[in-house]
Image 1 (cartoon, rainbow, N blue to C red):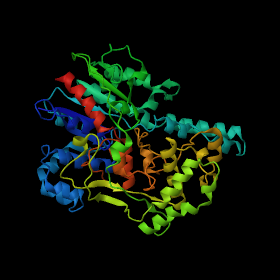
Image 2 (cartoon, one colour):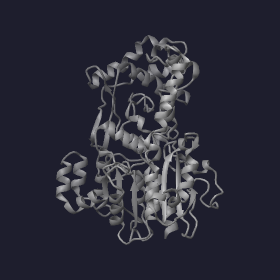
Image 3 (cartoon, rainbow, N blue to C red):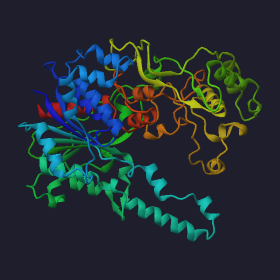
Image 4 (tube, helix red, strand yellow):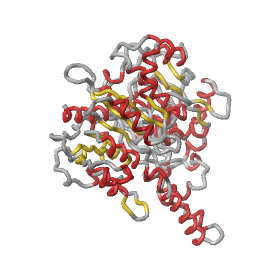
Length: 529
């Protein structure tokens, strides 16, 4: 029988998808997600839909599932037509917030026990919400714009007071301690093995001058001692870093060894995450390290998807109007800026001349046969006959010019432009632009994803704007769609993200790449079996 998996803080299910997709040598699933817990309603809808899909044997999902993806039937009608699969999906995907006053620990324990039944061999996976740990998150919470504060009444005193207030807010953030709910479940339910994922910024995070990561490692190694209020027997774990210490003796690794560079393992994205695998001390055997794989580039991941134009914000949005807005570049005064390299200027002129009003914006489902260049069997589903979650954003006219310039600059120069590379007239009218030009901080705010290398990290900030995720094709002149971001995160094409588009972006950005998770699952399966 498949090894049961319990998924905490599941998000849209990237880690669980990797485990559930692994096929054992007997051609049966190696793992089965029995319970996934997620507090966000839209991510939970995505989890529940995927649980419904997995309720059927591989390749035997009903035609109605594909009809729902194509917008032909409602979700309610899909679930009503297959009540057994729908009920299984509802049992598996639980909308709940660990640590909330409305969810008692006893209720969580009961759901886990019911999901596992009598099975003793199982795996706990997941990672606490990590916004409070992230490097960017901490700089926003603690940091104060020095230029802005120095100009305020009181100068340094006001700045110091504001920093102290933000530091107190940061240290009081309950997300620092959400890992303790994960810890309690370890202590009470004693899984043979667990996988915990978090952001790299956790390595340097401190609360009240205490190094968070050292504390977490100590607690995970001996969760019962760390949770005396749970009043359970001692259980100890050997903590194994998959990146470099998969065969190392317990206790010989450094904190940095737990950082996995996913681009080294066949994921088309430069994403560095902490992955901690804990093996219960009584389990025999060694966990193998993740294998190195050939680099997977952004163009190999998304080039086969339908070409789209962006929307035109704050103006009449038609294909013709969009094309005209882009064509205006040919006569734009900024094109004469002497800082533009001649090769870039020539390519801009020729590229603008090729812009045609023949592109659409896509939608929740686009009828199109996409043929992935890499990992074909992983992404492709012959029954899909289209692309989900592939709709472009709208951009204001000035951003269209910036995107076009940036994409052409990247194609000629082999790198994404920094703010100092932009013509002066194209710089955004933001108060911190001058500071960015002088201090070189956040001076890459218009970032093109280069086609010949893995993309930069896809994070939840992609939901707010597309400036850091500009498509490398200037003729499309836009930021990435949800589906393109999902490809870079290695979600299969038949994996639909539910909710409004902004929420879809958030789900994709917060996920663990399923293709990486499948490699972790393979190492775990080899140890447990």
